[in-house]
Length: 538
Image (cartoon, rainbow, N blue to C red; front, side, top):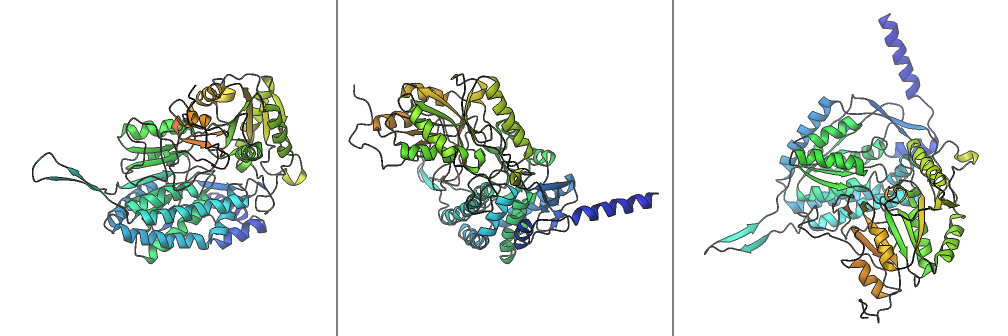
């Protein structure tokens, strides 16, 4: 009887693994040497392995199962941590410029696979093709940045009070960096962390989102091939796939000197407490409930498309997506009319098709979050100006496609959950204000503090917006939309966004220092009246 049972299980597994895979999927996976007919090992510490729970990677566009990945068992995670620690001991002794040269080779290897890796991002995550390719390019670019930093690992000499003495401040590697990434940027976020961490001499342990394991496996394969050619242990960039239990084990491990977590505020709060309880270091990139403020003197030909892209791009699944819109009463009706017209042009479709501008939400769970949020808006008397439903077209029915939505909630109270809660979907809530001070109050009233934007030609408004009485977010834009990041400038948020800073900072300054909030100010200069004083003299 036992023998028959085993045969039945083997037969079932064989049937599942020989499933039909669409040509669009099989072509991409094969190009990246990802097997399509067997379960894929999801653990790497110099060797590929994985005998834990089997996770399914599901395409959000078609609903098809792309692959089944074998995650890490507790024993495999422990072994991977040990190998990663050992790899750090090797890497820390390699001169920083030599580490930079290896990063340059990784950059070249990623660039050679940029387009197909970008296609994999579109296939597994759901963002449109140009965004998928752009995300891989971001990894390429941050490698360039880190190569330069590898020759700038400078300390400093401090004057000593003691005669005949000098004080040297010398940067040294930290150890093992655990990187827990979210589904919405399944390649770039690891790139931000790995590139700078590797340049600094740290080994890295990557725990990706359970729903995007294939992107992590593909990137790890590329990095591992370069490390092998240079005689560097593969565990310098190790990988453990899995669910909540694997993530918790990484966060709680004393062998992980720094944890970089990207995800929700709720989980980030747990991660921060767990790491702090063992006196580890953490970088938290959490929620972003971002607002755009449109002043009466704004150039609407720039502002309307920027808000449109900020709210609709990546189907509202960027941490910097525009979720709140505050319009000055004088231009509110005109702005909303033009924005509604743009929303009417949106056509959802396969993100791998060049002409597609709107892809699906990532999971069926996200569909539920969108539907519940829209229903709550309706139940509380909001006016729905655009969207509010799933797409009904036959070719979209198997995917997670929803209509981008504009709503005017009945309440303007910024502390109401409609305004203060981030909904990770293409829903834009709009309200009217009368003064800049009122708009700033609305902007700052929510718990999150990642990105914000003002549209104005008056430098007095700019001065107030970027000053101590202005926006309290980490990224404070002027005539630039809320979404996006540049590797040369600090990226991070304040308040419940986590106070972390990535990119654009020295290797020794991974978090905001001291008692000063830090902000980055992207600014478009074209429409500023430079003759006007920064401050109102009246």
